[in-house]
Length: 293
Ligand SMILES: Nc1nc2c(ncn2[C@@H]2O[C@H](COP(=O)(O)OP(=O)(O)OP(=O)(O)O)[C@@H](O)[C@H]2O)c(=O)[nH]1
Ligand SMILES: [Mg+2]
Image (cartoon, rainbow, N blue to C red; front, side):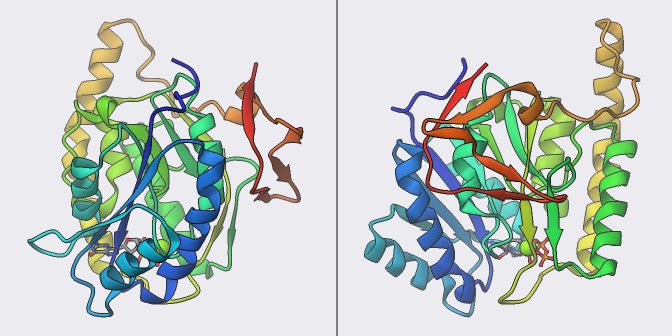
């Protein structure tokens, strides 16, 4: 299957905890991109009882903006990864996009992510492919992210360049073979290691959060390392399976095919929907896409 059918809807799964200061802009941006999706869509906001009233505000804003916003409030301990796993369980459509609420992930990229699915298993919005950039991260944050990314790529032999991205598109039917636990808060890594999907990566401009507090702390780093240890046997087993089936599982990590190199994405009324500038990519919102080989 190439381009997903327009009669098929999209579920956008967003974990939230104390995102009151970001939720209005986020939902406004999703509402403004909705016409380009040309398909029904719902927002599944999985909120761990944020004390700042994120969930109530999101429900209200959904009604005001005519967006289908469903707030899910899990029981149990607060967990970003657990919230995403729960969202994937309860969403209505097969096609799902997972993203953060802190405006680091631009909703204007969603149409391009869906277009890039193009017969693959998933699409990752990537900070580490040519054309991508990260805005206003302190050096320490860069170091932590790069270190964790290298641990995941080399230790677990995943080929995706940004396996810790929180912004990605998959089909839930493809994910049925994966048990996403959400421990370590990196569900994409769980998918990449356990299902070995074919994914494309789309570059984007990651913006550091402007409002609200980061939930990244020393404990998150420990939980991530725990996840790597848990996934390690699966990564070895997957490699052995690939070896015995004649595939080159022991190759060093390779970049995933970049959809911009692999296909050309054309706007109906003009050239590429990306403007790739000096080491950064701006996504031009408000255009219709069609896929061209
Ligand atoms: N439901 C739920 N959502 C969470 C939890 N922790 C974080 N989130 C949400 O997960 C998304 C990512 O969280 P962030 O705090 O931005 O973590 P990060 O993106 O790894 O780190 P920074 O962007 O550097 O702050 C945001 O939408 C948060 O609101 C949680 O315990 N439960
Ligand atoms: Mg964030």
